Length: 80
Length: 272
Image (cartoon, each protein chain N blue to C red):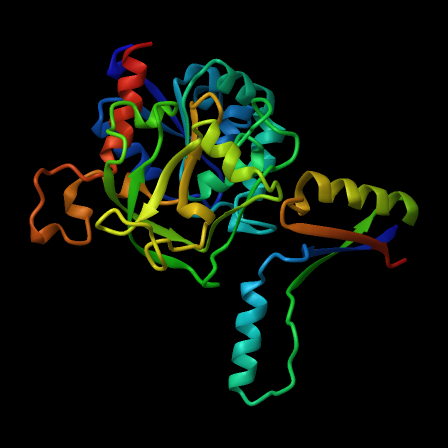
């Protein structure tokens, strides 16, 4: 059984209110020197079959459900 | 078609809400609404409960949330509809039957590719996104909407162009985005803009009158043919004047502004 990581992140230029609000709150707690804060979602998934096939299946899953191509990019990597 | 013959499918899955308000709204204008679980359309139920989409004249996707809104708002509901009755739904839309999506329902229609659907009935992949509000939080307050449709959308049949309506908004992800630089032009040219947020005097909205930062203050759009409409604010919560935020300060009638949208689609069907 293969394990893959599916990383869903916002495309460049799409505002990330969750990231910027988190940054603001961390700064209010006294943390300094914070640059951009981005939120990313990762699904870790176990799939039957070899890792190579699992990555392909993961990409198909992104196209069909996990990512909206208008605002999100995805990257699927094999963990093992 | 007579009002009492109009059957409305108010579709739900686990975690949907506002379906009761949606049913009540259609009942108020004389139709025969029914709450239908997606499993009933799939036949995963006892025989007496089995339904098929083609029995209905209107499909309404209620607003609130669905399936925990995991992955993205409306994405799971959309994927399940597509897997279960995608073909039937396409036929339903192509038959010219009205489809309404409110709030989460709008998000589902966008995820399904039924809106804006510039090049066909149902796009393979979403052409737009209803993305996190500019404020980064859930926005819940009365909105003022202006009917900016020029006659294409069946849900504004008989509503005067430029008419203002007070309808509540309640959403966290209502900002309409697209990667197509001509997106707004195409919506405008095809008469696919239905409602815009405005200020109470009708002037262009600023936050919080535009609760989510949608470009061009867009609150609702329809497909090129005009029979599929999605909007973020909740007309089904504004069917009587008594649910308006300021109802004690005097209203001209007992009807809320949201009722017009349900009356409009019934008027459209009465001519079919």
